Length: 185
Ligand SMILES: Cc1cc2nc3c(=O)[nH]c(=O)nc-3n(C[C@H](O)[C@H](O)[C@H](O)COP(=O)(O)O)c2cc1C
Image (cartoon, rainbow, N blue to C red):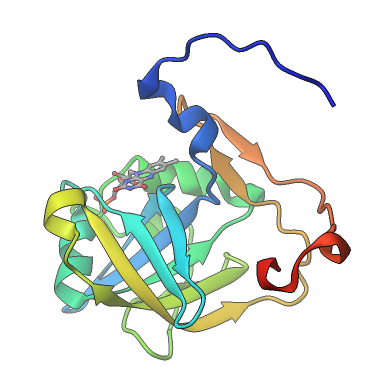
């Protein structure tokens, strides 16, 4: 195994190595208005119930819609959608309908009012489980209440943001499951 000689690294650039993704598109809906934002800062927090945490900046229009509705859908795009991902993340839904401007199709969800995105291979309907960290950290803690995944997609080429406008694309799967303790699978 190779050993690395490392040098001092600027803390502000930590994201270049720890921001794992996948990049997701978060949809929201409040009083007839709908929106989409691009999001990279998130993590799974628990298996059962499935809890998911994410950071949503208060300056984003989505923050207001999501905070009021206490619902959202987390949609997972693949690399073929990178242009839409960048367009969604670099425009505001305050003045335009990003579904129309970014060429994405809204489909009804079953448990929440926010829409699924048809072009994303996976979508997860979420309800707010804990709002206690929003004021301090912008951290929303969600319970995933319904999942929709296209079973035909076995190795999704998801996007993983590195900052500076650069993405990595997920590649092949390495399956080492036989060497895992059951509790770690
Ligand atoms: C690759 C990428 C990742 C982003 N990740 C986040 C994030 O994790 N949290 C966040 O609040 N904004 C994030 N943003 C910024 C929002 O997507 C952006 O401000 C968006 O325009 C918000 O739209 P809205 O004002 O219509 O809600 C990201 C943008 C890009 C391009």
